[in-house]
Image 1 (cartoon, rainbow, N blue to C red):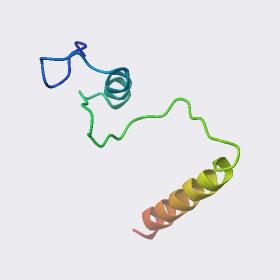
Image 2: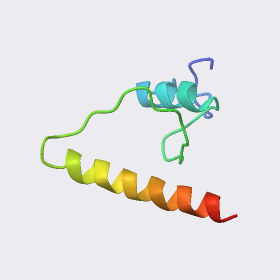
Image 3: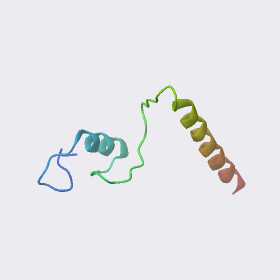
Image 4: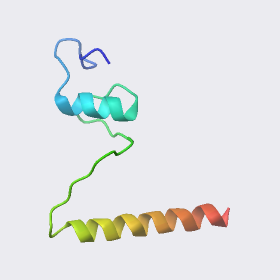
Length: 68
């Protein structure tokens, strides 16, 4: 990561730097990224709903992988 975005005319934003490092690939604004998460933050009201949704997604993923 050189600190420059795919467009060499501008430096990378802090978000581009963070996601580039976490994904292991150069990232620019607008890209979809699969990255390792080392820390997450939620709000008091929406946090429990989001965590419940994540568990549901993982449950479906685990069931699909066991079925093959």
